[in-house]
Length: 112
Image (cartoon, rainbow, N blue to C red; front, side):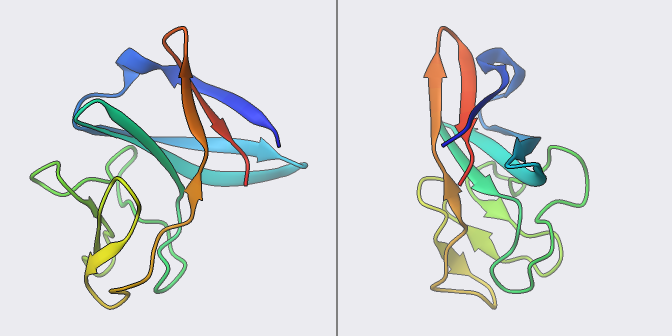
């Protein structure tokens, strides 16, 4: 499994999110990291309902409250901790998670 350094921990607010491009097996994959209440989580940037990217603007994945990940296309909302859809047309489905870890204040994401 390929692990890629994506940023310094201070580059993500709390709550906050950061879009990242992962080069895995000669493929570019869009992903994002969210930080909520000090916890980091990473997901593939693809809505389980339509497959479109979740964000309209760079680095904006959280709803206005900063509590949930929100799909910009149809408003589906996902829990940051496990990617589970709690509201919207894909309710009951989940985002595809990616392993993420913090090492010496650097955030690393592993390719799926």
